Image 1 (cartoon, rainbow, N blue to C red):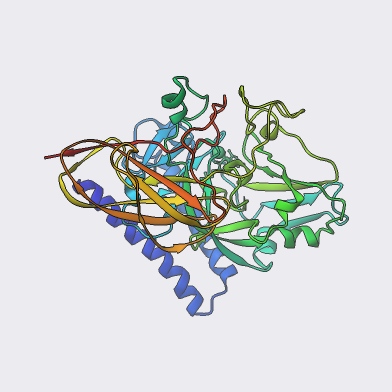
Image 2 (cartoon, protein in one colour):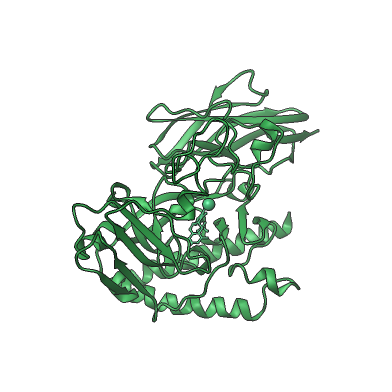
Length: 414
Ligand SMILES: Nc1nc2c(c(=O)[nH]1)N[C@H]1C(S)=C(S)[C@@H](COP(=O)(O)O)O[C@H]1N2
Ligand SMILES: [Mo]
């Protein structure tokens, strides 16, 4: 408990220090561009230092899949994937600090130099192919939005409880999501400068990681106001694990569409197919038919979900408590969150707390006179378009989009 508090405090101070640096630089008239250039070189040095010391443990190999520290108090460990522990968000602000943000790498975090990095924009859908440097990107029109990034497999582990068989992939509970303030240039601005054709159909960002993750998106999604090429996260340059120097933000879409370490944008007049929209990130199962060349319906938007800011299968002392959680939807604001402390027999309405930002989340809470016993807490969110979390979700082999209401185990001791 003590150690947790200390860690929290260190984290709090670090976050404050980062925010302060950002605001001070601004007040002194240092341009955002110059601030990011300075901070980017500082971040590169700090990361090199972390690598040099081979992390905090004895095993150097697993430690270098990911750059930032990922202590077990903050994350569930799945090698190159790190799941946020929801209890660390209890009573915290709206945003997830960069240090606590979940990480999902298909291979490992590459180390990229901002000074030599380039973004190529090319393909049959543009008439003036472009190559942009980091400075070029920083000098384009800037915008900031608060949005979530969530893995398509968030909640996957609950398929096993519901169907008695495991869906394949990382067995996430509900911590493969985070909300941050993302700063960057609208993707549209870059496409326009490359002479986007009326006939363009797909945009495919390509990652500079070992697997060169490539997840195409429709031109409609690419042109949305909040689809960005992002270079800052919560006021700091993107950390290496989250896509330094530049990543895509595709709000409300499956996490994989938010391609990190982007090095190329292919704009095409023909539909584009890669393993990430044919074999993976498609729904495969008895309820879904193939959509050739994809093995099933291709995933785009996520689904509304809720999570408690309470230790999973943890213990709390009896007495009057405030229970907190958050709910989110890709379709708009959350309008209502119901909860049940008696395994779904009776439901009540939780109090929603501002802000309530579409395609981010809303915080909620309720008071509970907790008596000793074992419990299974439930929460069920409804969004402004009337989408409500269902009681069940049909099984799919790869375990995507699980958003049924689940029981969160908790023991209240005398
Ligand atoms: N280039 C590249 N982009 C990527 C990935 C990857 O492995 N390589 N993982 C994707 C997946 S599956 C998710 S859920 C998000 C996770 O973003 P985060 O690690 O910043 O939380 O990044 C996406 N972008
Ligand atoms: Mo993901």
